[in-house]
Length: 258
Ligand code: PEP
Image 1 (tube, helix red, strand yellow):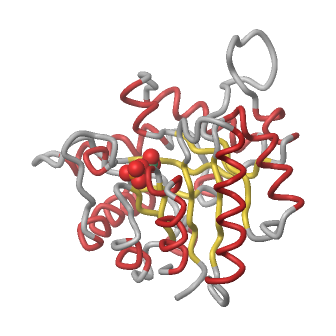
Image 2 (image 1 turned 180 degrees about the horizontal axis):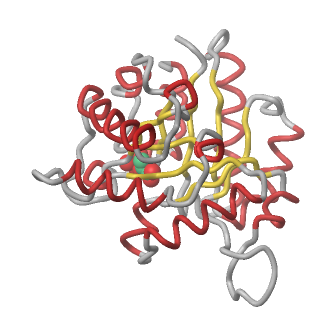
């Protein structure tokens, strides 16, 4: 298996820095001992308040060179009066390399529109950070592919082919996100069909050449059992893991199986 992205979206967990340290120490120990010869690009996305500590741990532990730091959000502007926001330059000073944008919890719980996602995406790129762009339909109904196409067009509006090729795109159907009632994972085959729909919009509407398409990840109820099924497909470059990324034994199993 080629090098795969494993993105850990910790969301609003764990609840203390002590637990975060414990989780990282566990990953460090087991990564060295049990996942030898495995090639991953591991990206840890903690809550903002732990970024500084996690950044120090990643640069001083054996995880240095094995895991990169990601943020879960970014301010629309780099400077100015934006109460409660964290800017791109602030993230860079903490050694953040990736930023999640367009996550369904921000789109649907907080009300971020496609327009806001698009502006944040441009801010991430302007700060020379790598966006992890989440897209996905809310419901798997007869129109879901149409919904997906429109979401992709709006999310990437005004971006050059070159900029789009710098992103990671995570296909995350909202109904598959484990925290949603009745959630269940998509199948690798059907996730791939959706990824092909996204690729079609990017090549036809956004004028990307096929060879410049960015890596595509799958997210939604990924666990220790199903991760390898998604990761075994050449077209799926990685997984975005939410709930299971803070369950330490399970997360190590995902890394072992990748
Ligand atoms: C996510 O939050 O992006 C996610 C995929 O969550 P979960 O793995 O818990 O479904």
